[in-house]
Image (cartoon, rainbow, N blue to C red; front, side, top):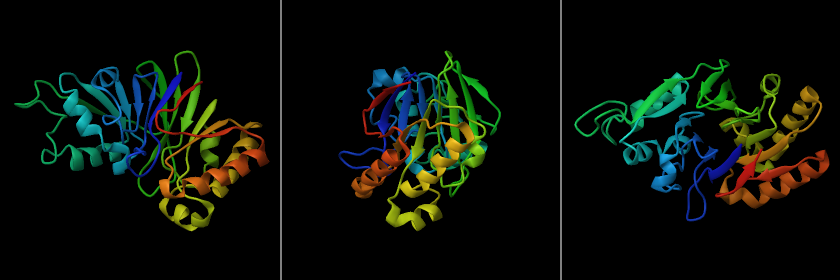
Length: 256
C-alpha cells in the first residue's frame, strides 16, 4: 500500500495545501487538494473518493475534480450528513453544476454519492473500508482501510480526544492522525475537536494499553503558523514513548 500526501495542512498558501492523500494512486481520502495537486492524467487514475466530514478544507476540490473528469462517473463515499453538505453547498447548481445529475453539460453524472454507514465495512475498489465515528465539531468519521493483501491503516480525519472506543475497533499498521494545534492552544483544540501533542500522548498511551504496542504514526492537518512548535513538542513525545512519529508534508510518500 503506497500513500502519497497531496495536502497536509489546514490552511493554504504557496507552500501548504489542504488535506488530501492517495492510496495506490486510485483511492483518494479527503479532497482539499485533490484537483489542484494532481495532473489531469493522475486524476484519471482515481476510482473512488472517501470524505471524512463536510468541512471546506476536506471537500473543497470535489467540484473542480468533477469538472475535469466529467466524461466518467466517480464514486464518492461519506456519511449521509457529509454528502448532504456537499450536495447542498458545493454541488447545488449555483457555484458549480449539479455534477450528480445528467444535464445539458453532462451526458452522465460525473459523481455518484454513496452513503457510508458507520461501523459497517464496505468493499471499495478492493479495499475494505470501515467508517468509525470520531469526536469533532460536526458529524465526522475516521477510516480503517485494509488493502487486498491485508495491509491496513487508520486515518482519524479531524478529531478531538477520547479515541479509546476507536482503538478497540481498529488493528492498523499505521495511524494517520490529526495534529492541528500546539500545547499552548490545548483549550482551543479541545473546543474545536482537534488534537495537540499533549492530547496525542494520552491517546497513544490508550492505544498501547489496548493493543500492547505502539503503531507507526503520521501526523497531518497542521496549522502552518504553529508548525515548528508542534514539531518540537511531538519530538519530545516520540522520544519519551519510544515510537516513530512522522509529520507528513506535501508530496511525501510512505509504503506500508
